[in-house]
Image 1: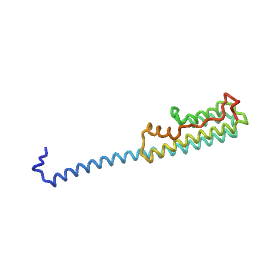
Image 2 (image 1 turned 45 degrees about the vertical axis):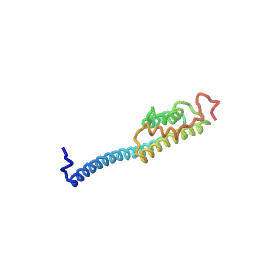
Image 3 (image 1 turned 180 degrees about the vertical axis):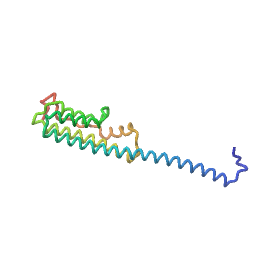
Image 4 (image 1 turned 90 degrees about the vertical axis):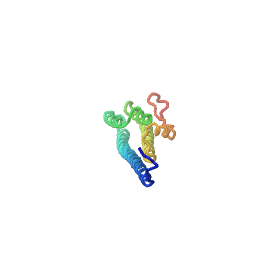
Length: 172
């Protein structure tokens, strides 16, 4: 192959330089591809946050003014649930709060309490998704398990509802 004794030093330096340059180009291309993926994911999540925030706002307004208009609320619930992955534990409080609104007759005096629970659950979900966006963008993390582990540390306590449809004594 190469005979180092007969090879000129300048040729050896040129070969080593070529190998290093090719390696650097390959590493750079891989880094750029990873950056493009993270950027795309970040843009998608920001759009998701905007869309979900608008749907939840619509749901809250309709619930506040017409709490027992179940057909309208059900339509919005389905639309919101299409955005939420059921197995994601960070979405559970919002799913439960929306189900309380749609599956129960809410008395006039309880609407404010239920709405407060809904807003707290919404804020929790949107905060965890925003934290995920920041982790992905700042650190280039795209591994869901690593991100979930960090989010669980930061958001270990999910909001607790004040309204319980099964136990009227606990409602405020």
